[in-house]
Image (tube, one colour):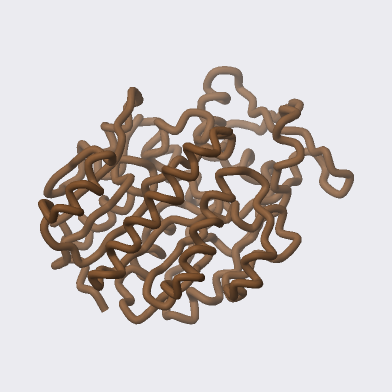
Length: 333
């Protein structure tokens, strides 16, 4: 096991949503020897960094050259969360460079030096779930059977396949994040969770707008997703990061599928208001790429001794709304 409190840790995407939440969780465990890389762009992503304690920050484009010449020193652990996470991104070349090639280089660097390497994959690799959403089926043939619905999902899937072919997955860990929501996602624009968007909608109009269903087996608002609070997501991630004898692909989800209407009801309850929901047309370009059902099987993680209780949907939404969205606060504020 790695003693995270004494480790020197590199966190890519460390100003972003899950990345900054990981730094916050590491700080809670006494870890401060942390180097963060990211692209701060023109959003207020920088605000996620303000409450955090870390050793150094550098732009993502400078990381690989500095690692190559050895100017950053030694690391015990790399948490690679940096990526383009926009499921609507259509620039395939950009996604391959940013999500696939960058990860290949960084993983090779870590493996060749015996550095613990944990990276963000995605539940988007499972596509519509026709071939299951199990993290126990990790043979090359099983992974080849998956059919991601968008280029973002494929860019993540491509590295899962590459790492498998390289024989790395007994030494590194890939995290298939499901629908994570919570503090520090304000900068994500259209990629924010429905909880974040719904909070703004209710304050502005008193109602929440949900996509209509375009499948006869799902009523409007009955589409189901595995919603996971970010505080649970980072606890699960660090449990795997500390277990040095563990490798492979792991689902990071709540293990439950809940409907969009249940999520909307939780937001209204957190705000002390009666539910008011309307249904809007889904953009044409999304209809063939939309996941109607996701649920993480987390038995593999549980078998490794992760026994923490998952935060219930209502409890998570209430904490997020009352302690962060209402206050416009970040983790650590």
